Length: 297
Image (tube, rainbow, N blue to C red; front, side):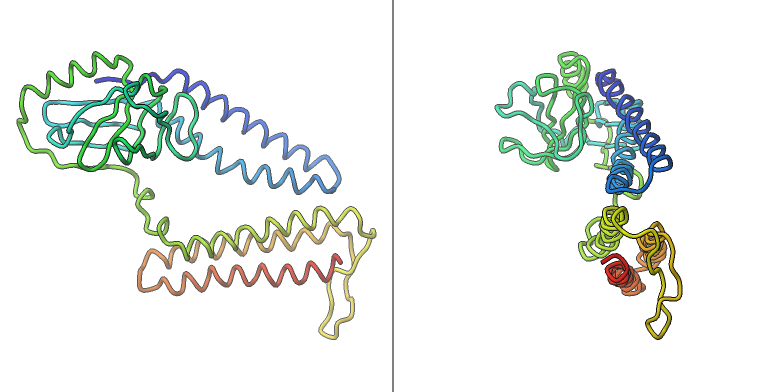
């Protein structure tokens, strides 16, 4: 069993989790203790945007805790959090030490020093899957027919010697290539562009409406029309703060439609209903925007 160096990645990950959590608490305190102004939307947006980032960092940090590389004469197993990547020995065509590569290797997407996880590409070896924690000089690239893997055992030379020793024993049993990971990794919706676009638009529009209302509210009168009867006459007035109900309604509609649409999406025959729900969420956001323009401008 070989472990990657984890101290740096865990330190940065835990520090980032602590800072983002503290920042979100600070944003909440500011929201509750200061009057509404153009900065209100900034605090809300920063808090909402930071939540998915915090989720990813927390998950990646958790995965580092049990990260390890196991191998026998039959297969190499990469364990990374809940993911187990099983690579048959007869699929591994060779090993390349990272500093023998000409270009700097780094995965795409969110990563930090001490936690290099994700996908990448190199002209020399093609597509790469990263399960590493060190810079290129401490990495090993496993070349296989299904792509290459970047790992970073603490003792690179010791890993290579042990690996070659197991290889010389010969294959005792045939092992199938296998990836064991949480089901959400393979959800079909991640590859459905129409679904992602509809869900994304329905989510973004209430955020933008929140920003617009926050910027406009401080410049409105103490009392403004908040409701009209069927004849178009004002039948309720109140504080401009009441306008925040519009983006709140938009966000609530998005959550409900996203969840129900997701339940429909699971059953392939009912996916048209899911698309209609997500489209309906977007149409509701448009109506709320029209209402906001009537109240605010």
